[in-house]
Length: 483
Image 1 (cartoon, one colour):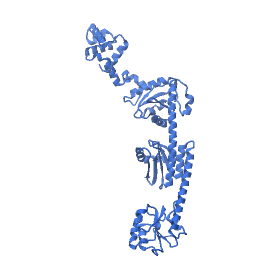
Image 2 (cartoon, helix red, strand yellow; image 1 turned 30 degrees about the vertical axis):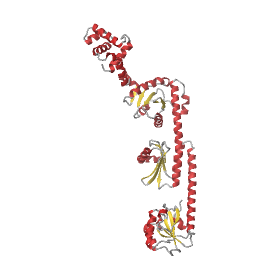
Image 3 (cartoon, one colour; image 1 turned 45 degrees about the vertical axis):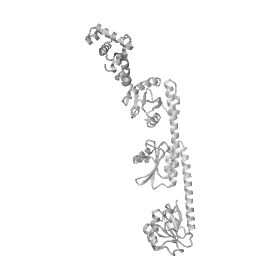
Image 4 (cartoon, one colour; image 1 turned 135 degrees about the horizontal axis):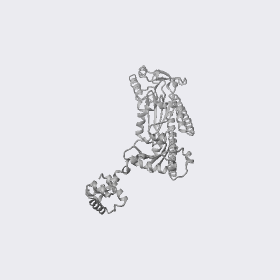
């Protein structure tokens, strides 16, 4: 505990007497300074006990001296009697009492150096005690970090060491751990402060009041892996901040390790997905990955459009329901193997194109993936989630990107550009499956006229319409262009 004015007055060896400002004797003393200047304020930082004999002090200067000392936050004024003044001037006593500035009388036998030594020894002892407390706290925090559930243990240990409540938040501001558990209910009161710190990015720290409590918050790591929030009644001392900083450093390292381990596991999951697609038996190693396939039959879900696929897999893994879900990255997609009861959860991801396969088994995983990929490509055009079973009702053209389909159609029909009669004749003939009489009747022409037109189409295209593939391409092109 820091030395206070009351402790100093209680030291009988010094013989000090409080003559004014006794109600403020519990102020801590940061240091001792001696001066006979009329204005010693420029040489003070605040918290000092200023010692003087009043060598140049007149009655008219007393009020000004007290005002200058209080303006810089001096802890007290010690006045040595028996030298320049036989007693403390009454004007100084009155001015100090009005300002609430403690005024200590220093008797002639007590040298100023004795007071300086007493304060110096006390400050050194306090700093040593603070250092020991910090060292002991750091040791206990390090021990907690080394336990099985190190992050949660660290949070609980910090709360006990500081007699405070502690919250550990993820980079998005969501609660990861709290101590005590009920402290998690404070998160709603901290939303605005968390948002401010997230906006600052990188290393950041802040202190602010929360009701009648003091709160310290800091980002964990240069690329904020989370936020540490500590609050309690009353201010935090310097030692407390050292302990908080030590806990923050340990939590940053622990979160980095968890993140690195998670990234390695996600890469392994992606590798094992490739093995499963080849039909390799890999189920025996899933336990080491903390992974499990959902019960068969399951569905394959493809998610497209994530800016950071690794972050998406990590977030989905943290939020996944109790049912088993297998998550992996593949190319530009995130792949999920899920049971039907988890479909609503995984297909509700905002801002992503989602494709869902028909139910499949591990043996049919490759086919299920193809279905989900096709559905996801359709979902990229605006649907949040598309099931493969819905594609049949959408028609073949809905599987082809609109721009690609139109470019294909215009290229195929380019030789017939501005040949409206030939285009209408070709469309009617294809619509009647190459039957001359029904097609000619539909057009209102003789069938020989229609034959001549179709032959002209073949000449312009340079392709035979006897080939089914050519007919299919032309029919598709006509549908795309709305001919």
